[in-house]
Image (cartoon, rainbow, N blue to C red; front, side, top):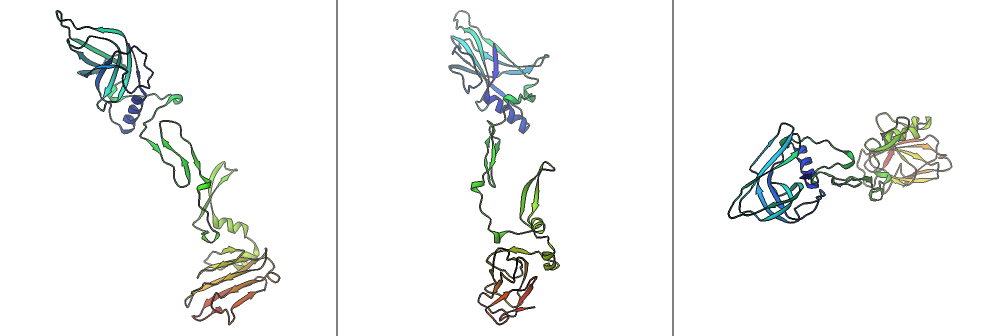
Length: 309
């Protein structure tokens, strides 16, 4: 008799190992279909009888055995199939018998004890050596894809995870936070991925003497090169190198609100920066035109207008 573990049996063994619980063979079934098992079976093809396991154990040479009893009135059959099932009805092992003839003889009733051997170290404590070319893991175990990843699924087959660029939301420039937002980049010199702080990028790009002179101790600056509405407390590093543009101050300021503006790149004498009061005056006018090189303008709202501090 030859016996092999089924795919469902492999999954059951993997789940047992992962959860540190034993596998219990509860029943032995017999069938009459003359075929060779493949391991993909979930049931016998022509099951005719199923018996509870009466006894089990391990021989000295490491074979695990299971005993079942065929009663005198079981049959008659010619048996070819045999299967070991757990308590949930999962077919763990399937095998072939070479045409065993179970007779029923009224004049000579015979009760037959069947013993099935499984080659494991101890079936209650299964030791599995995994062949990576044909490995099984529990189907219940899953890889879940999220946060921009696609793919995943149960571990019954190979799975691939990919970054779903088309599904990622766009980050508006105004929403970028220099210290909290992070880029992931490939560092070729170290041959590994590294995180890159947005503020470090800003300092690298804008680390000029002109920008350094515009820094105020204790705060970071937002680089802006096109129309933008400032928020109270922001420090705006204005770039006019691609042309003149307008910066709008907060629309509903309260007394004491501060916005600081520094022109850090471009020829501001030719391409002016217009600071618009956005409904409030700036130094008595609707807007303030900055046309002085290296200008830094700290603005404070007095309660009625913006004034240069």
